[in-house]
Length: 172
Image (cartoon, rainbow, N blue to C red; front, side, top):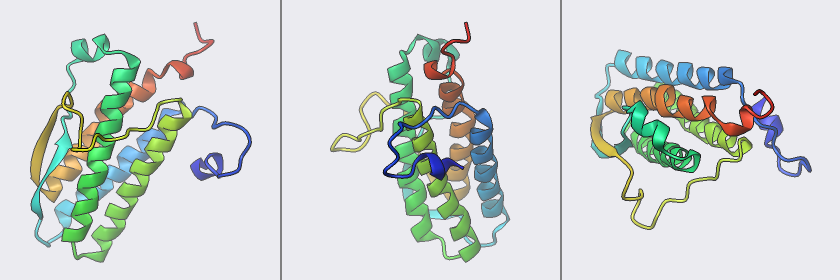
């Protein structure tokens, strides 16, 4: 369904994807990856700690941010998760887990396409990684990383998508 809207060569711009069931599907798949990792007997350590976005949301601070600032925070967080989950793939040998990890990476890409459909600019990381104002922390286990992934989708990504201005046009 999503790929049909993102085919190269379509003359029409992407239609906004405002249905939160799309995000719910990504959250469920992220939970499945987390559960698979917890059930796996393989070691859960990462080769080295990875930087991930902060998942807690102070709603007073979030509400004071502009839509652009919120979008940048979500985009940079997705970029960090993509980097971290990509590095997780190299430290896991279980093929069933590879499938979940690959799916998580594809879903992060798809969420980026959803954001693009809402006229939210793609994130371009600065030369040194993440912009200085982004709150991050480091995790050293695969289960922590996948928990951050789930919580980030449930939190900041959900807030951004549910309040996207393009999804509320004409509903006043």
